[in-house]
Image (cartoon, rainbow, N blue to C red; front, side, top):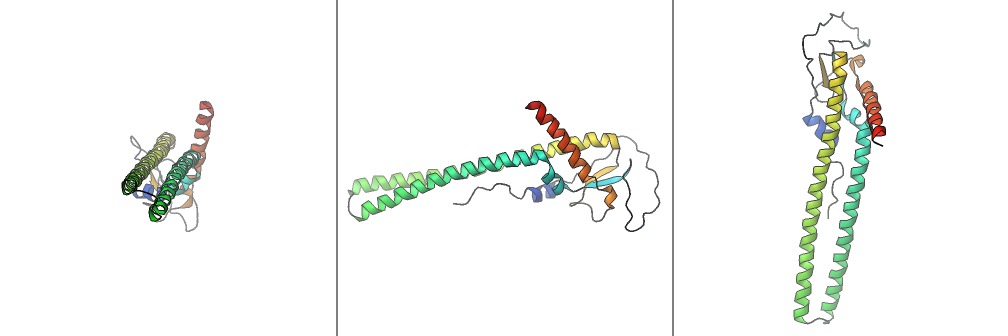
Length: 202
């Protein structure tokens, strides 16, 4: 029996479907900058196009870490329960085979036990498929919550900084000046906000 997936390519899925691009609402006056020399860094200012590393952002986000830990614990509990049921079914199957081989069962009793074992096997397979689907749905909801929190934060963040766009480094950017990478600043802001809200709830 295959183990229910815990985190199914979260980062890969996110990067393939998430091109984070925000156009600033209203007009923005963009100051002309002199060409930047190779190796020289700049500091992002209003009107710039900045970028973030989505995979790094998610992996460092405390909300994601907390939700992932909860999800993995639940997934492991589900898997343990399925394994327990599977081992019991296997044990009962071997006991039946042993009794049948030794001629300790009537034909009628053997047929009933065999039907019962087959029914339990089908029920276990159905349960495993159901639990796997439920875990996949919960995983998707978990990622939606994380991405919604990130997007909401970035909208508020950009309302203050007035960047022309915030793009995803991995899915869009080929080359960019390190000074325009605001990933770490976003990570720190997200975590500070998450910890503040979490403490209020606690």
